[in-house]
Every structure is written in structure tokens, then in C-alpha cells.
Amino acid sequence: MTDKMLSRKEGGVGYVIFNNPERHNAVSLEMWAATRAILDDFRSDDSVRVVVLTGAGGKAFVSGADISKFGNERSTAEGVAKYNATTEQAFSGVHDFPKPTIAMIRGYCIGGGMALATCCDMRICTPGSKFGIPAAKLGLGYDYKGVKRLINVVGPSFAKEIFFTARQFDAEEARMMGFVNRVVPDADLESYVKNYAEIIAGNAPLTVGSIKLIVGEAMKDEAQRDMKAATASVQRCFDSKDYIEGRTAFMEKRKPAFTGQ
Image (cartoon, rainbow, N blue to C red; front, side, top):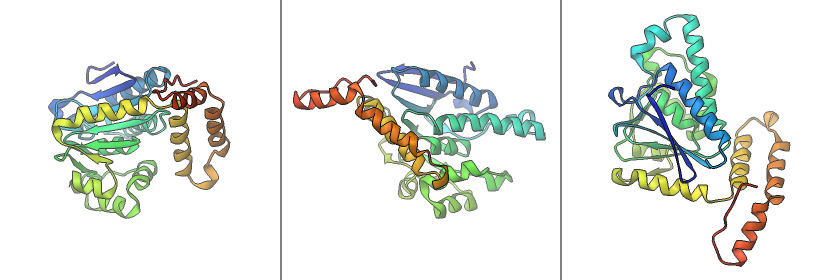
């Protein structure tokens, strides 16, 4: 595991930290691979109910690909194919993760960083954060999955604007576009996200997971939706011990202790 990726578990929340601050958390191939490995661990750990992704150093979430490594990683057709497959594994690992994911953004969220944040369920940033996808300034192609994910978040018109102009935009524009859920003061970001994540972690995991699954299915083309999985996820909630616990706690006027069973 590269030291450019860090992780920790705290209060039902797993943290994925991009740790390349001297390059504004630009991401190399090995960092994308390590991201997937961390997520696999969080996926299998029932104590982790929410995942927060963020960047180290205070100046960037993720500023995109590490261009200094393009010569080694993306200079040949084979290299490009390997790079794209590895990054897609990381992006799909976040996008399809069965538990809620939050991008905690301070500073630059550019290129691959914005693509990564797009894969998260929610995005919370500081007022000074900057966003953009500069593909059109680099001559890069951008695949269908990445474009579709952005469309699902901001809609087709803003997605086109983001790609066509390739410009950077600020936190208020990101909020107006619907890209970020909340803009909070810089000094409050960690505590706000921690509290938000712990609120989610304290709710019934089966209910939260069911909603994530159903919203995900609803965003697919109708012919691709797995309605059986959606229906089954709802039934699991009603068949669960947590449903009994939730009703009992409500009647007893106490906080429920959900187990995910």
C-alpha cells in the first residue's frame, strides 16, 4: 500500500485520505489502485457504515491526475488502457459502494478529483473550493460513464458547460449547479462532515442501503433497472430486527441501537 493513501475508521465512519499534498493531491496509478483496496476493506467491515473521502494538506481534495507521471503511465495505447481500467475500478468502486459516501472538499477539486467527487453520494465543501474538468484544454477524451455520472448530478446543460469551457468555477457556482450539497465555513468543515456522517451512521443501515440502491436503480435506463433487487431491499427492512428495534425505541422514547440485522 502506498503512503500516498491513508485510511482510518472512527465512530462508524471510514476515512479515505489522498495524501500527496506537495502536488495538491494529484493521483498516480498506484494511488487509484490503493483507493480500491481501502474501499474493499471498508465494504467488508460492518462497523463502517459511512465513508468520507478527502485530501490531505488543506489546499486540495484531489487536483486530478499526476501529469508528471503521464510519460510512464499514459504514453502508449497499452498504458492508456491500463490507466483507464485502474481509474474506472476506483470510480466505480466509489459510485457502486453499498454504503453512503461523502466527499469532504477543501481547495482544488479538479479533473479526476471532480470525477471522484461526482461518484460520491454527497459533496460538502468550503467557500474557497475550486472545481473544473480541463479535459478540453488537454485534448483528452472522456468516457461515457464519467460523463453520464456528471449528468446525473448536475443535468445535461451544466455538464456541457463544465466540459465545453473547461474553466474553473467556485463553490457558490457548484452549489447553484447542484454539484455540492452544502458549503460550510473552512474552520467548520471537519466537524460538520463528522457530525453529518455520524448522523447517517446512527440510522438503520438496511434502510439507508435500500434507499441508496433504489436511487441508483432509478438513475439507470428503465430496461437496465433491477426492480427485484429494489423490492427485496425494502422487504429486508421490514423483516429485520432493526425494524423491531426502531418501533420499540420510538415507543420507549429512546435512541434506537441499530445493528444492520
